[in-house]
Image (cartoon, rainbow over all chains, first blue to last red; front, top):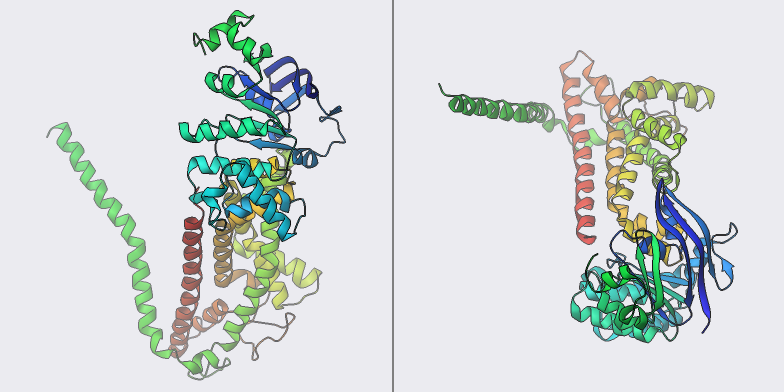
Length: 251
Length: 285
């Protein structure tokens, strides 16, 4: 197994508040890593470090390095928009653009300057097939994305991310706004995507973490408490707090 | 009398005061419009719209006035729309939260409250004299552009603010630059609000009189402008001029011109409302 992403000595501050404390972690390529922990434990903040989405928060401040493919992405000469083309992100709530389905999925390619209609058509179709949405929308590609149901919108957002073929997928509670059927579809999708992508997923759902992830990291109050193979975390955790959390005794 | 009866009477009294306060503006406006229509409606015909000004009231028309207004509106629009929208985008999307930008913000809000005659003096000094434009359409347009600039900036910022942050996040997340995000996602989503602001600003410019008088726009211009460097008059100045004459016939002319001016403003405001509603229907977050 190969290390894709490495977090070294990460401290994160929002003003005076320390959101993450000395995090060191390695993420394996083509694996799903789940980040779990109670609300406010810093896991979403942590996830957003990997594509530098925290940069827009005024009070945000950090120490340490995030190394992807051997390169620290917080170095001064890194072009953030170029970096993000290789790292897709799926958000908690579906956030389609108020445009057509086709325009939503092709947007990431359009901003890279790709205009070839055939190429765009192929990529849009492929992305929608990957996200298991093609059959439902293939005749309505010109319709507004806002007319889709919540579950379809979230799969559209995943398709939008896949269309640019990133290497890494960051997912911030992608199924928290979905019903069980839509959730199952998205989980199935994550399972298939693992072959090609390195996936990091934040989730509040213990069953989900145990179903879809290879590795699980448990965060509590800004500290990384335990990080191991998912099997180990859920069957014989070493730390008592991890045990209490996954068995639902707190959190 | 018990306390509760007292309170109920107070309630009643305030109710009447409220109705009175609400209706008084409408009643006065209704009375005003009624009297204008009574005086001026019969004066409006094709000749009135198509005649040059004259010393004889029955021969005088508003051709130079409305064509001057049209020139002024077009040039004001060309100047103020790109400037106002660009400034709004900068302040909302690019400007950091430094002391400089908060200073800029306070000043722009203050500018919106400066009396329009002050803008006239500014225009007179800078555009008419310093830039040597004379009392031309260009000088008038620049002056009015300054006057309505804050309206467009504020409207643009409000419209941009109303676009949900999740749209920005989605666009940035795909590797879009700031400009791509603004151009492809935020501006189209904010278009309705910006357009409304633009139309309201322009309809304000159509009705402005004081700054144009200060920069030397004349009521008697015996020709229609043919270039932006020509002298000009506009509808409000023509109205002002006619009303200040002693002959009753000119007062009737003024009433007729007021009707035309009101129609133009109502149409523009109507368009603004129409676009706002249409846009709101299209984008329903």
